[in-house]
Image 1 (cartoon, rainbow, N blue to C red):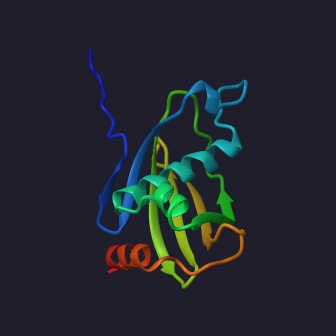
Image 2 (cartoon, rainbow, N blue to C red):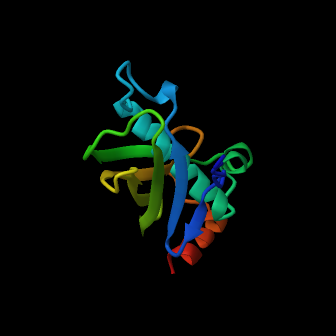
Amino acid sequence: MNVAVLPFGGRLEGPRHRLPVRVYYEDTDAAGIVYHASYLRFTERGRSEMMRALDIDLARMWNEDGFVFVLHSAEVKYRRPARLGDLLTVETALTELGRASLKVRQVIFGDGGETVIFEGLLACTGREGKPARIPAGVKDKIEAFLS
């Protein structure tokens, strides 16, 4: 019996983070095709695991510093449907770092090599929900990754 063991948190590969995601029944509609909103969950996991790989603790950032990254906007292009049981790879790349925002490009690769593209802007906000500068320690880690 062949058993595939997937790296839970994915891995950094050069300037990108790659996260394997298996499509489960809960991710699909009645026909076994991935429901459109599931792609947003997959990309959220990719962004979160990339931050973890960069040693950025999002829970601590919120609980101790009072800052959080929120999805400000997204552009999604569906190229081919993913289906129940498929193994997908969520590739996340930071493309731009601003004072209070991060631009990311995420591509979801399917079994057939086709892509679903997700591009989004993450904004840093404080507890009041207003834009805030990215904390210096967090920004330093992101800048080191981008260089």
